[in-house]
Length: 156
Image (cartoon, rainbow, N blue to C red; front, side, top):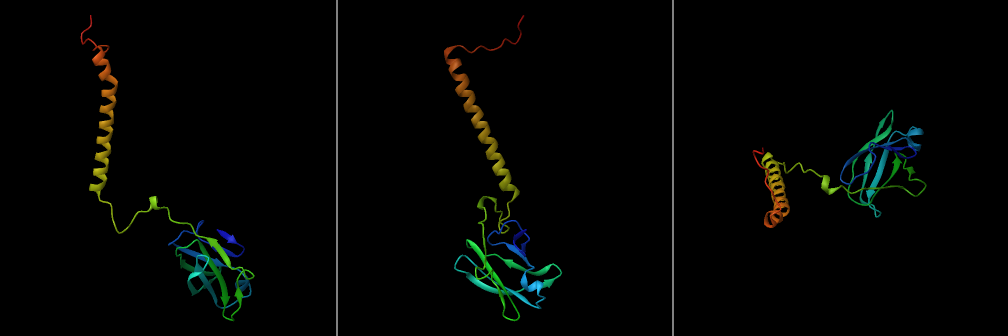
């Protein structure tokens, strides 16, 4: 996905605590710089600042980055000559989305089949109890009032 001209990510969304691959085909790639570094941080205060050398490929300079937590991913680029591409002083800033907690499956805590069976069993019992309550509420008043008739087994 192209987020801005000459900067591409391998994902549609930037999600905190995930790995992303960034490709840069901007000024330094077009000027045939030998080495390009990405200077990045997280949040609007640039927490956890880091510099990472990018790998030169046919598709541009690329790097794999572990996103931290924060509301934004801030970065800019510099080459071996100390020249900067920082979006004319504005830097490149993209929002980081939070992980959706309800969709997280923890690798450290495997779910055993026993847990799944217990959940299934409790679900079935709750269905049985609800059915019994429904029948009591529906048929008990009819039995008390005498409006409930059994079907004759051998009607002639």
